[in-house]
Amino acid sequence: MKRTLILVGLVFAAAAGGCVDPKERFGRTWYIDGAGNWGFGVVEVPIGLEKAGYRGQVSNHHWSLTLNPALDQTLRFIARGGGAVLGDEITAYLRRNPKADANIIALSAGTGVGIWAIEHVAPPYKVNNFIALGSSLSSKYDTRKALKNMKGNIYVYYAPTDPILQGPVRAIGTIDGTFDDAAGLVGLHGPGARGGRIKNIAWKPKYAALGWTGGHVDCVNQRFVAAELEKWIVPHPERSPRVAQQAEVSAAQATGIPETIYNASDQPNTGPR
Image (cartoon, rainbow, N blue to C red; front, side):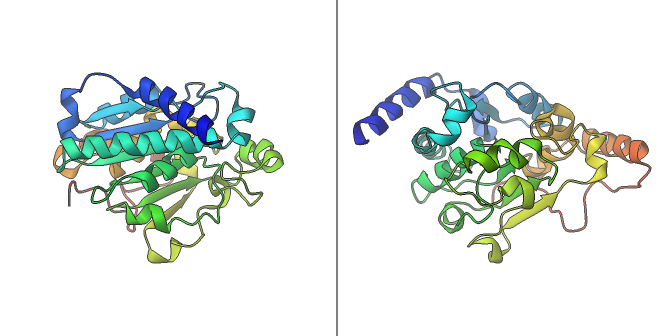
């Protein structure tokens, strides 16, 4: 097993290499696709953040070794290996840019990769915010280790109607190897949730107008990213409120429900702290 993990690390490290993007001084956000890395959100997430005024770099972290969702979900050392490699990459980034924010947006099994990446970040460096979408991580997962390596929050968008989490994931287990309800169905409620830094956000009718109908992968479309997810990523001085406001007005018109840009309990990212 040790040799296998070393091999996995070498493969991921080779894939992670490349030139430094000048945008990274404005912050960096890693997007992690789900099991199989079939490309859901790989194009849409960067476009959505750019439309919302994000000036930082957006990177896609490819972690699958099989391109087979069922194998990636059950051969869990793959996801853990991908998380360890990403944790090293984030540490190196923050070492180069100690005043910048590092964020993660992850989908489905990619949320396991994301949480393990955060756990693997070397002190004193800390991830800013983590957005979990359609998470196949256990709803009882202990987030305390990850939160120690974060300065912001974990935002969990969940929908009880998610067909993948209600079906296949119940049969083969969560990405961390349990048969609990997935966090993408009910939110994250394990150890660490009482501290107030786990923000569980349930599907709302207004989200349908932004393209998230409560399904498994439609939450990574660019409209939803630009109008909703960006508020946890785009630093306040660089925000483009006009984009978010226009999208929110469209949602309100489509649903017939008047909405403000933010809920009273939602506090947008105000940049490095």
